Image (cartoon, rainbow, N blue to C red; front, side):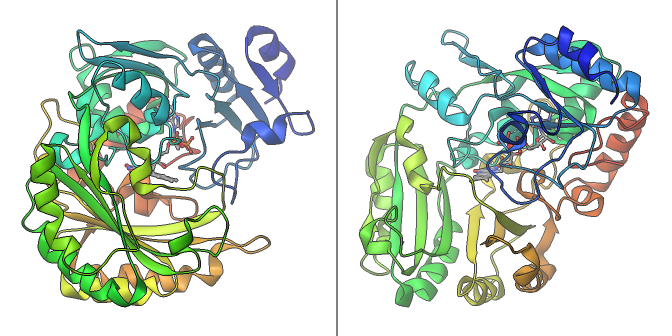
Length: 447
Ligand SMILES: Cc1cc2nc3c(=O)[nH]c(=O)nc-3n(C[C@H](O)[C@H](O)[C@H](O)COP(=O)(O)OP(=O)(O)OC[C@H]3O[C@@H](n4cnc5c(N)ncnc54)[C@H](O)[C@@H]3O)c2cc1C
């Protein structure tokens, strides 16, 4: 990248190079391990900045990475251009049409709050600080997904700057191939500047968390396995095995304890929701039980994930069933790592009205293992344990979800496993056509 000064003159946001004040803060996001170290950062203030940045990178043959919040950081870029979108934070709700239009840097918390003012909800994920655009383009396994499907199923239009520097408003009608590829193929086809998607009419849910102490964890997992085989689509849930730190921010009953956290979201009437959780409550007394009728606007309290940046690594598999052997592997791994099992299926298993590249609709669960990375260390210490956990899932392993591939795990081979083989071939062909010089390669890369 040679023409920084010329580019800075055309950018309303900021252009930063190593050594500039603000360079380190701008490249930094939620994931603290392995962050991007680009030759130049374009901190975009709007779609026109993105267009200028892409055109300039294309003219110089400079590869491009994009970052909104850094929750889904792939392998960090060493060199190249990083376009950051955090300043692009506009949210517009059309209550009559039941849609939201969000700019590239918008986080889910802002959309949930804006939609709730109209009795509506997006198909958002567990954390309010995750970016809405990348989450949606990676599929989007949401709190309401068994009822309403993947977030990507609800996209109406995508504003994107493609490798030729052109700004395109993409819909199923205007460009069916690109509309198909962006929903699942994400950063490989351009930098998305805004998304428009449908909202769903959910104002209140019956939801919350059930926390069980160490000794009850095997019985909780057994009950969860049987229970998820019976619940209706209105019920979306997950369970995490968490060695909670003995730290002030952790609720007192959980401090320093290894506990199971069952997360409940019933998008139906409260009485039915209350009845549905009975078999789980019957397993054992809870350390904390917050399941209740609640406004959807409070949904971030259900997973209650830490909002502050951290260094972590993780591995996951989409599986066709929750075999007792997977439960046994989770119990073994849970002694050392955070283990999470999310219940999929329901509306996620049906094809969307407009097809997309998002794969593995036949998956019934997502099983993940996650470890913090301690300062001064890498992921090596816990990698063998993560690999052993994923290896134990092999007989049921259907593939990966782009959204849950982080850091060193976001290899081309793993990214390929996020798609059906024929879809991956189609993505590769479209990539060759739309981004022939592979400008967009510092990402979850489709070669
Ligand atoms: C605490 C936590 C909770 C999560 N919960 C869920 C969940 O419930 N369901 C789920 O499905 N996923 C979940 N995820 C995964 C998350 O959806 C992905 O990591 C997602 O990519 C994060 O998007 P981001 O913008 O926040 O992160 P970023 O790291 O900023 O973006 C990730 C990647 O997306 C691409 N990208 C970003 N912006 C653009 C753009 N404008 N145009 C094109 N490409 C772009 C880039 O390649 C970038 O590297 C969670 C992750 C974390 C850390």
